[in-house]
Length: 237
Image 1 (tube, rainbow, N blue to C red):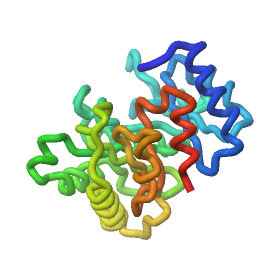
Image 2: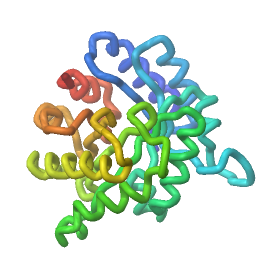
Image 3: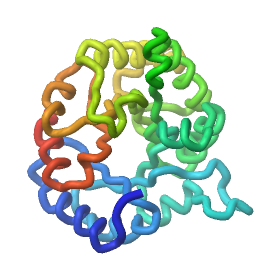
């Protein structure tokens, strides 16, 4: 919940102007109020646009919500689902994230499904169990593939705090997620992108992005500055 129209569109334009020299996929997910404007500002560039959430229903009496079809109509190709701020701040369950993911898929959107443990769960040694449970509960039973789904690991205790897991902990979590995906989906999942989210910034992105099974980042605070965002993107291989 950052930025009004002028500032948000300016940020998107600054990113899109440099997108041609960046060797990775770029996606920005602005607030819904400026989604159309940002989609227009990035049109013709290498920058994709996504929503920050969607409702699971196609339409109806859900005041204040947006459907996947509405996001698509506004210019989105992706949508973030199950972000920790919605899971833990608004009580979203795995089952609801699964329904939203299925709705996003039905509208041709790529779902970025977020999973991650709290600090209490981490301290209790429950990280990998939590990741398996959230992953299994949040993905539809069929139709999930590399073309419509991205998984983002975001340890809740690292978001916005400046703290990050060790590289060994990130590697362990991502390796576990890759293996769990194969079991849950019953097929080769090497093509599904796994992102790390949780205080990724220019100072640590280079190290984090070299970790096995880390295919990119879900950038938080550092995405609010074009220079910081592009500095992270520039170290992607």
